[in-house]
Image: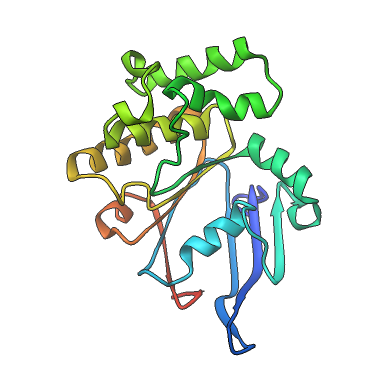
Length: 228
């Protein structure tokens, strides 16, 4: 708790192993615990192989642990079935990855509309929300462009808009500037903090970029699947 306020997300003793070809298991996460509060900005820093991306995926319910507990506003997420969890995730969480994962056959606008359409919103409402957000991202002149017609920085801004179009409570980002040049990387980093303040998001970023990490008020370091 912070000032008596329960955590937005609470992970308790998360363990994740992957099977090995010899019948053994590779330990990835070794009892990880973390509280994330509304509006908080924190960075998980660590070298490649530390387990930070795996932990982020479990926090965002994209993967399940072998053991441990995961709560969102005191609701036990690991008790939900896959379909219920998918709907919950689409409403409450946004994700940005190192690769933008946009659909090549859809325009920027259509890509951003996808989470709204999955949630059952009308085409008109989805279009209005996506258009507004893309204009806020400085992409008003690019909404009808396809991913192949956009620069690396523009692609990542479209991906961020898609992650935020349903106004989630938390935005997870995994190495979001890893494929960008220095200028675009700086712009995207600044954009994350602008959006966090504007939308009241909790922001959780995984990176191995120390310069990016140092912009956060809270930095947590991982090594070999545990905090250090």
